[in-house]
Image (cartoon, rainbow, N blue to C red; front, top):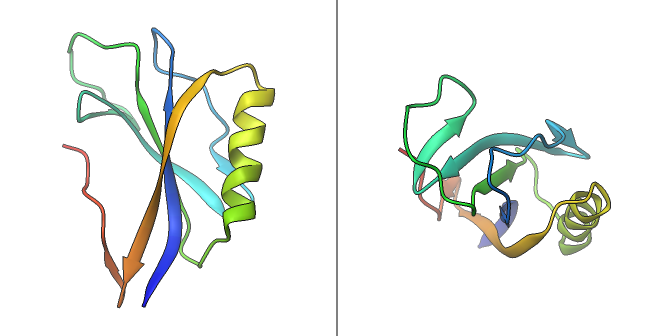
Length: 100
């Protein structure tokens, strides 16, 4: 059975965004740009695009409402998000890729 354990939120910004490190049961585990991890540091010296992926994950199962609350908070902080991708696990295995 698949269970929801996180979300990738894509933000439209020219820099690496300063986001809350935790929100509810979720922790900001990485920010990547062009598939390369730029948070947590150290970040490699790469040309950044204006569409970083911000990954929040939880060790416990999440609800759609908890994901929506996070997205609402990101919006309230003044960030313009462009899309979200829910992250699922099945039998303890991540069904999503890891950043480089």
